[in-house]
Amino acid sequence: MGKFEKKCKREENVKICGLKTENISKNSAGRKRGGLKKGTALLLTAVTAAGILTGCGQSSQTIRMATKPMTEQYIIGSMMKTLIEQDTDLTVEITEGVGGGTANIQPAMEEGEFDFYPEYTGSGWNEVLKEESLYDESMFDQLQAGYEKMDMTWTGMLGFNNTYGLVVASDIAKKYNLKTYSDLAAVSDQLVFGAEYDFFEREDGYDALCDTYGLTFKDTMDLDIGLKYDALAQKEIDVMNIFTTDGQLSTADAVVLEDDKGLYPSYMCGFVVRNEVFEDHPELQQVFDKVENLITDAEMAKMNDQVETEGREPEDVASAFLQEKGLLE
Image (cartoon, one colour):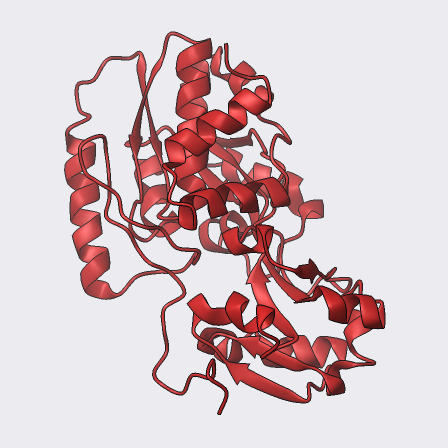
């Protein structure tokens, strides 16, 4: 058994952090879009409710943003707070790390308890609109129309796609000229594939990947989520699954392959805003326009790494990025 092989029970793919308004500290954030264990979800939901209640009776010049418990959402949230408060007379109150993500934020949006939040198109399609098909960006108009029925709008599409992906070690990619998932088919029987337990169990995980692309790997390795990049670097594995904005991806000696048959849905990040907020504050649109296509996958991964690996504060990373893009006055 290789030192990275893992036979113990399933590890969750996310570290859920505590909820933060402005006076509740946050811990490390994870990568998963899914739900929480029941007890944790109930606790965070209760804290969320408490945070929302404190916002009652606030000034009409204050708008409320929620974020999910993910590193990149803390960074994005900080960017928007900075830009909105710089470019308008509005104050932004952030409720960070809402437990359950979409499942708890969307109902609060519908009740008017939050005004906007960063969301992923694929999540909106399946989790909010309850569509069963896999989402791709050709469906954006349908997604927008579905949200309009709830008096909400997608805007400020940031440009990066936090979806599932595959990487191969750079030397392997060069040796076999690998650029797409389909390219793997001819050489997969010579390669070792690594992933966390979840990926081997998911309906759209390992079996779906192999069936879609005709892959037959020489061996597979069940890895702790925190050891995957080490395993790749130390040649324990040749290929592994990722999220395309993983922080460690920014420094890994690896090549992201193209999902040329569109196995995985798109998760482009943008903002869902209640229409009433734009009616009351039309000046907000210029700020959302300013962040259109602002961030690439690689830039988001680099910023995530600066927080998760280097230990920098999300606010500092966000500010430095905006300064680099010439958006701070």
